[in-house]
Image (cartoon, rainbow, N blue to C red; front, side, top):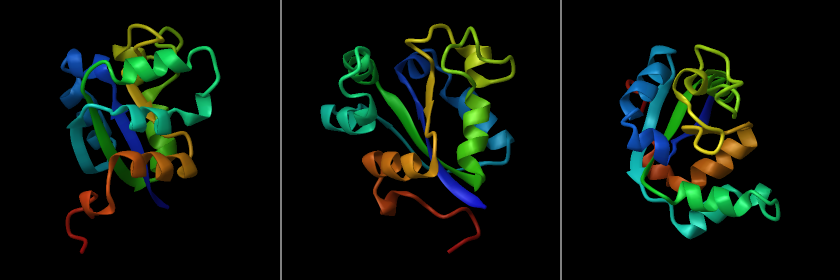
Length: 144
């Protein structure tokens, strides 16, 4: 089943110039990047993105961090894209993430863990809509 998911390369990934390396891994897996942009997350976008963590002690730090520098937001498409990207990303804590995963190979700290990947189809739909309009998401090459 073809799915779409959101992949966000967080400020630490962008600052460490890992954008191309991470996106290359996604494409090498056979997934397609159908929308891509480098942005600064607004306060409104950050609140919408992390709304499920509102009221938790780490919520303010999440909001501050995601707005601390530019990010690269991407819509990734392919068979079971949500599950595939989550597997590639690895555990939130880079020290517990398996070797071969993005966080396991490239991550440094749990607070700055390189990437965000939607955890379900519902989250993917909600998160994609925060950062992309429908017109910004192009169909895969060869499709109308």
